[in-house]
Structure formats: C-alpha cells, structure tokens
Image (cartoon, rainbow, N blue to C red; front, side, top):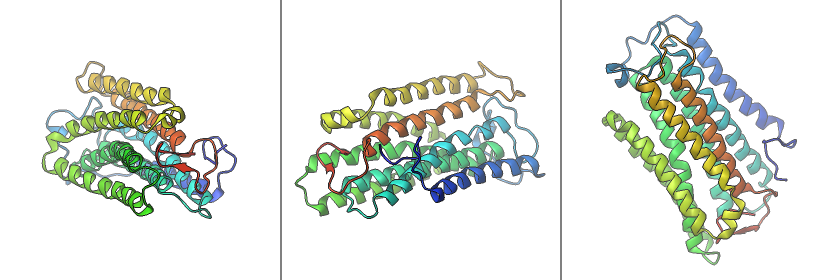
Length: 308
C-alpha cells in the first residue's frame, strides 16, 4: 500500500499536527468572528449586496451569514488532507531521485491542497463579512482549485508527447511551465475578477468545464495505463456531485428553496457538496499520481502520465 494519510497508519505525527493546526486555526477564526463585537460597515461592500447575497439574511456583527460561513470548513478538510499527503509523500521519497513526473504530481497535490485551504478561508471570510475583499478572495480560491487539475492534465499530456526518451531538461521544463502557468493564469483571472466583477461566476463555471474536458482528454491521450489506474467512477462521481451542488446553488439564489432566517441554507449545502466533490477529485488524482505502491526511483513511464 502507498504511504498515505487516508486510512494509513504510517502518517508522521508532525504532518498530522500541521494539518490539524491549519484546520483548527480556520475554525477558530470563524468562531472569533461569531463571538466578537464589530461591524463591516466601513469596508467596501460586496457587489452581491446590490441585489441579494444568496438566501441567508445578513445578520448584525462580524459573522453576517453563519451557515454560509461555517460550511466552508468542508474545503479546509480536503485541503488539509491533500497538503499533508503531498508533504508525507515528499518526505517518503526524499532519499530517492525524483523523476519529473513525480515532481509534477507532488507539486499538483500540494497546490490543490493549499488552494482548497485558501478557498475555505476566503469563502468563509466572504460570507462572514460580505465585503468586496472577501468576495475577491473567495473567487480567487475557486479559480485556484479549478485551474490546478486542468493545468496538471495539460502538463501530463505534454510529458506524454515528449516521450520517455526526452531529455531531463525538457521534462523538467514542462514541470516548471506547470508552476508558471498556474501563477500566471490565476493572476490574470484574479485581475479580471477584480476589474470586472460581473465576470466572476462565468469564469468559475468555464474553468470547471475546461478542467473536466482536459482530464477526459488526458485519460484518452496518455495511454491505457492512466485510464486503468484512474477510477473513472470516482471522477464522474465528483462531477455529478458538483452538478447536484450547482442545482442547489441555482435554487438558493433564485429563492426556490429559501428561508432567510434558517440555519439550513441551500448555499451552505452547495459548499458542503462542492467540498465533497473536491475530495472525490483528490481521490481520483491520488490514485493516478501515487497508485498503490511506494514511490520508487525510476518507477515511472513518461509515456503513460502516471507514477507506478
């Protein structure tokens, strides 16, 4: 079995403590907002206040939408586990010579984990404050989470096209390009969201569709080995969960299911289901990247886009 944090006994204590600390810190921030006195009135308000910021009625104080705030811990759980897994795998393979494909996979998992953590915190801040800054961090987190799988799939296909005979310099350049693209794409999308806030949702849903298309393409292009290692049912379960969440998001924002003063909110369910979808996508890529064996030096075929 691979050395993982998912049901494994081999997870190191420091890594577990790090993960627990990140999660508890996020939860404590939300708790402090709920208990502290204050107001966000002097902050620039979110653009959604011009119409309606989802069904939940904004309350007084620093935690204006409690249900929509606390539900973001779902992203934090996925993010913490993914980040800790990347650290654990890195520690496990530090005495080995990593291949470019191994580096790519570890970089992706680390970025995916950190992106989910940022999304959990950012979306929580947004719904707690309903400020423009919170809105921006919320959307930035969503873009990070969605762009990482898309760019990873594209990078895997580039490694496949380069072939196992490509020089290490070429393969390492593909890994570095993935990191640069991740930063540049999200910087550009963040700027677009900040300057033209009306585009923020169109960007997000376009990214989801693009990421799904990239991975479906990678499953076909990167050879039968990747398709065999990847559990397609997990991938499509993640997509189905997201589509269900999207239906609830629409029902909430249109007021089809809405009790403004209830702690049961459709948008909170959207957060929980999206957190679950993100977790399923992580499990899907975990199988592709880490498989069921320890990372081994040289145990990789650049042509099948998976570590074996």
